[in-house]
Image 1 (cartoon, one colour):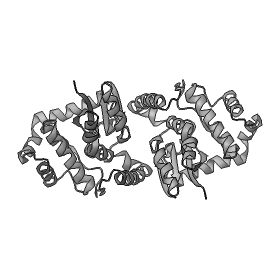
Image 2 (cartoon, rainbow over the protein chains, first blue to last red; image 1 turned 90 degrees about the vertical axis):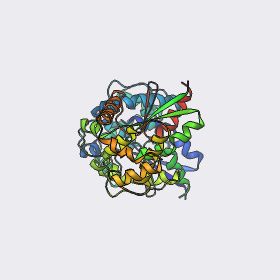
Image 3 (tube, rainbow over the protein chains, first blue to last red; image 1 turned 120 degrees about the vertical axis):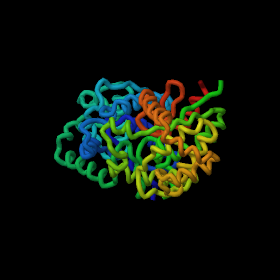
Image 4 (cartoon, each protein chain N blue to C red; image 1 turned 135 degrees about the vertical axis):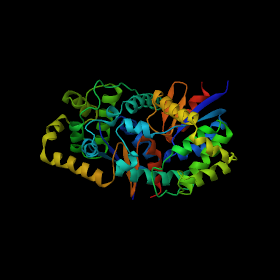
Amino acid sequence: MTASLQFWFDFASTYSYLSAMRVERDAAKRGVRVEWQPFLLGPIFAEQGWNNSPFNIYPAKGAYMWRDMERLCKQHDLPLERPADFPQNSLKAARLALAIPDGKPRAEFTRAVYAAQFGQGRNISEEAVLRDCLSDAGVPETTLEEMENADIKTALFDQVSRAKALGIFGAPSFVVGEELYWGDDRLNMAIAHATQT
Amino acid sequence: MTASLQFWFDFASTYSYLSAMRVERDAAKRGVRVEWQPFLLGPIFAEQGWNNSPFNIYPAKGAYMWRDMERLCKQHDLPLERPADFPQNSLKAARLALAIPDGKPRAEFTRAVYAAQFGQGRNISEEAVLRDCLSDAGVPETTLEEMENADIKTALFDQVSRAKALGIFGAPSFVVGEELYWGDDRLNMAIAHATQT
């Protein structure tokens, strides 16, 4: 059996950008396979009484996050272009990711969406942007038509339920066996644990 | 001029325990001096609408935090004994820390308080516990009498005001020049930045 790690992400999450861009490379170095698990934080935040990103609700935390992202992107040699709107509506991107079977195409689409949003400041709720991301990932544009399919909508509801059941309350999160890791800062620890299972 | 780093901590903060126990040693290795800055998160959390620790308000986050602390304490070879009450009232400990001039005695008292609370599960709002901590740090017990002094109360109010002005919204936080770093995970980055200033 190959060691594996579940990478849980919401496309609107800034710190998930950092993880998305390196998780596969860093995990592969240790022989760990990545399962790409898109979900939505919105319903989970709503249960905590938040109808917006905590980075908007708590201004000091938000100001800090953007400065922290600048420093971390510089460290990881990633471009950072703050989108005009934050958080963006990640519903369509999440549905599309689920319409793409897990594996290389979903991984490439996911990276394309994060790069468009936080590397170029584009709005990922726009279908033109998502179309470019599909193209970048070599995924047929016809996948766009699947977004409204009942089974895809159900699959995303199920992802949110699974995330809650796993105790997930933020993104990125990593799950290895029984262990939950929250935040880009725990990626290395999660990979290390996966190599021991 | 010696490079320096401000370490801002609330005695009730779990993750501050991790930082308190190694900040001086890790900073000294890089030639960085530590300024010990006790403050209270309570008034800052209250402004965010929280009348309790976010780890109690949001149960999933709280459950995660304690598991995360177990893993991190193991990694850092620190004992962890979860106190019966959390968060503890850190007012007296903070006043005492301010009554002790910054430098070696304040550092040792601070470590003694964290070790008592999270290493042994003792209640740091109790004067008997604080007396032991003063003794461990080689600080005269008479310092206990200073807790009610007006200048010490004012000094603690001022610390909270300073923390707010610095954009601090959680603990531990580190300040190096104009840069704010939040969380034990940023300690290394803060020290590295201090060596460059």
